[in-house]
Image (cartoon, rainbow, N blue to C red; front, top):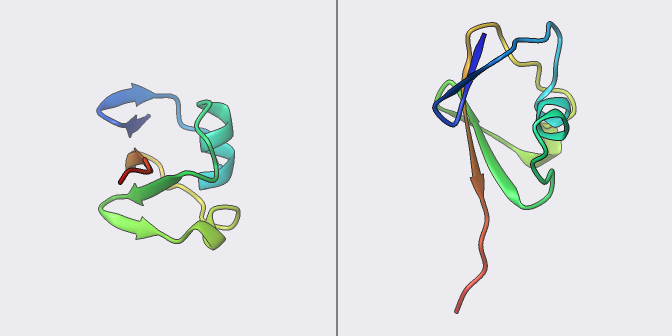
Amino acid sequence: MLTLNHQKIAYHPNETVYALLKRTHFSTTFVAVEVNGRLIKRENFEQEVIPERATIEVFSIVGGG
């Protein structure tokens, strides 16, 4: 199991941040992602494998003025 934005979801072995975002219907462009409290750089989304029982926070980036 994983915790994604305070909700339990299924763990998929060897799943990357990018694949998780796609699976859970998040934008892969306009978000910031933390895995276990560590900010993941956008350029690393496709390489960063999510560990089992991770806590993930996805923050939408909103423009404003």
